[in-house]
Length: 414
Image (tube, rainbow, N blue to C red; front, side, top):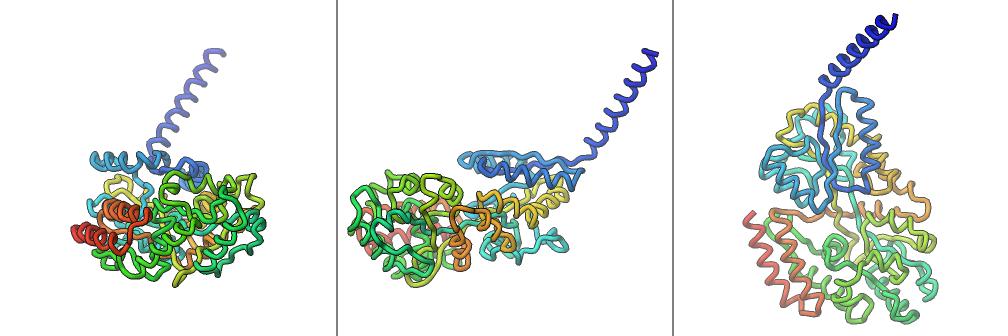
């Protein structure tokens, strides 16, 4: 009897192992590349849902910190072993399409459940190259201005609203400066980064950064020069820290320590700011003040497919699910990023219970696509270097025309 039972168990185990082997052999493994550990829980939750609906596909999440992400991706591309589906950003998409590393999605999108018109248009356009769609938007960000109600109350200054102007911001800053001591910064801007500050100011002043032809820039136009001078005026009045101070200060830390009355910041700071128990009961956020027009830049991350993947059908099934309302809602409720799909972005706002962050989704209504062109990293570096001189007090009318010529040369090389 003992022998019979063991024989039966052995046969049963063999059968189970065989069945398991067959099932494993029938499964397609998809590699999915991402870079943000903070978003990993939401990513894992989405993948669990996908695998439950697609039992023939296993997804292996490959997390690489952002600083190494594109270095590793470039090396993988050289060896033809990029993940099947991975995150892409706007500054790099033109390089990856130029080298034929991304699969055009137009043929897959026809007849699929992906509705690109449900996504923020600028994020869709950002991943169109030469008339082809190379990415489906994942998330989108915007810039707004946070304010500390306690400092405003101390100074007896009314809180800003979404319809305020640049002059009103300067007036509020001056009143706060007068009512507080030197430990309080009336305005904080991270002028070392175009996305959070000067890209927006150029657009609000009526200028442009990269013209639609992608071959020329407008960074030395009269509107852009006007924007630079207005920043210099704030510095001269000590309403904004000096360039040296800005290079040494961390805007996020200063605001969260209660030492900044107003701070320009991206939507990625909505979660840490609103979760900070030391400030979240006396902070608010509004759209950026209008100079000539309401405007700002918005960057978007997209899902893309490797052109060399051996599993294109399975990869697109994953990509299709990632763009669904269900997956985008998981992103929204994580509060880490604003989902790019307009039909669910309100869930991101509703997920915050301590601060009304709707200024960010309102900012998207007038947002411009994050400026990109060939060699984005190079021309952006030239622009940043030129503006460092301006922020240190040099005349933008003397500095920026030369910078514009250098940037134009880079753009025309393509």
